[in-house]
Length: 386
Image (cartoon, rainbow, N blue to C red):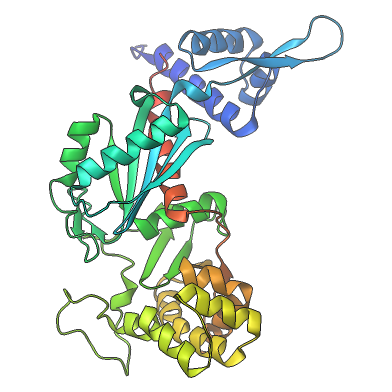
């Protein structure tokens, strides 16, 4: 009978990973509790903890009183063993957040690009400021995830198409990786918002749902089988280009805001709708909040009917378990808008999907970027324990 070389090492690595994931999800545990949850003997659990302590991945964080004998030591993951950075890049603002390996956000800042158009320099500056704000050494960073508007090419990882961020193009990713010397990923902003929704929001732990981002611009984050669906070219979810009967088709896709569905529900359309119904405001979110607070039923009904055109198209093609309304319009509309969209979709769609409002607090793109970066960093850290 032959023996496979490296098996004990692999088993130790698997046990270490299981223990670290358990400590992250359940909080501090004693050696005995760790053994009970993982099925390891007390001796093996003790050896595992000693190994992880030697690598500064876990530490004693307290004591637990028991019956007879001394108190049992409580072990937890060392938060400072790794940090990650998430960024949300907009034309007029870059937001950056730093989180430790446990997922705790330790710093969050925003910077004004101030006319600078060099993506590498802008990101470096934002990251440096965020680290200084949280007292985090740059050397402790393990992963960066950057959310941007536009289409990200799945083959190269660069932004392939973004009307709002023309300086983000092929070669930017390589420049970022070279200067930051840490794994860097660029991801579509609405996809990251969908990740945040699955980890912290209305689609908690759901494997099949769609986030409809409704605001000045439109987008979709599609989660199928627990994985983001980006499409062959990275363009899945660009619902603003959905052809809509009665709305002009674009003659040049390089022209901003020219997609049919965008013309129906975008910023200009919402402003026109608000004016027609006597709803005051300074932005798309303001219009919708004012309508909800003032009980402008006609405005909300018509807006919901327009949004339902896109939502129904998604529902009949993908049949998701849940549709989440996000973006400035979705957040401002709350349940008053979500219920109306659900009813409007049910009138034209046989699958009758459930429609709810986003529940992610704060900046959903930034939160999703941190979720993605943490997944990458934990993969690095947890696979290098032995």
